[in-house]
Image 1 (cartoon, protein in one colour):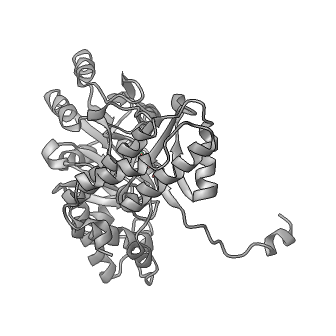
Image 2 (cartoon, rainbow, N blue to C red):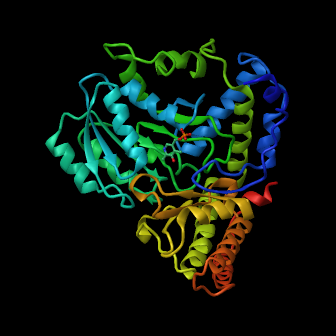
Image 3 (cartoon, rainbow, N blue to C red):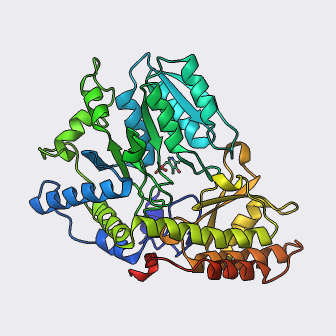
Length: 410
Ligand SMILES: *Cc1c(COP(=O)(O)O)cnc(C)c1O
């Protein structure tokens, strides 16, 4: 880079977007402002007290009393890897469910840990089939772990975590569950389901700045990892070492915690507690019903069958005759709206509308439908202007708000 290029660089001012993709989601001003508070040391007694509150707030979000519950300093992918690296030793058999992009990443994690992945395959857009999981255990009763994605963001499908966990229990296997997109959007009940290693992400329904990932481990997993014969291959992700910083008894240096990012997670979780988990789930359902009414009025069909749809991630087939990428490009350029594209085999075939966390609100739903109508009409599709918004608006009227809603706590 020559010096002229360098001097021409000045402060970065990103545009204000309406974020309706697969994450990151929009962030409440309270969460942003928390991030700008003074940086203090990661062993400062004031900071340590905030860490204890964070752990307590995360236990609420995960509905667990697990002692080892904390935010990993890294995105959801680091948390995913943390589970596998700690729990899979070379030679271990792991049953992994693949019904989308993130299940495929789990398989790769198992293999890189030297384990053997027994893959349970379901189509993109279908939930994990519990019968196939049962069969995989019958054929591989020595499998130590069952790993699955609760909310597959690549397709917008929810799998039945409770039933899958029950099968794992019958075969005395541990469970690794990806709740990156589900946490705070639909019920995630760690203790009630009896799941063992559960991770999430800060930037989806928690609506916090990207780069952190909440995680929780059952006591039996902690004991299991402590009793490993070979050390965990990764120094950074070894939970037995992380316990020295995030555990209940000691606070010693492990790595420099991302202090300011953790303030923002603390604030996002305080807001979740103020709203209430149940009210947050209800808000996602309510906005989903309205968005769905509008999208279907536009003639767009959902990829996922109704009982398995995630309210926070709405995948629809592209409207025949329209240029899939052009629609997304114009939404961003003309309306400042980001939506998601299809991944893998669904590339070019679906659009994904995310309404996660603070992005899950009436004005986003209505703006998005209005933008789609104007554009579809302009691109020559046969639609009735105003019909999608009317359908969405009526859906809101049919499902009045319960609880305060995230907007009201501003
Ligand atoms: C987003 C996502 C991840 C990865 O999280 P990053 O923060 O992007 O690393 C993992 N699993 C699912 C289901 C996701 O939606």
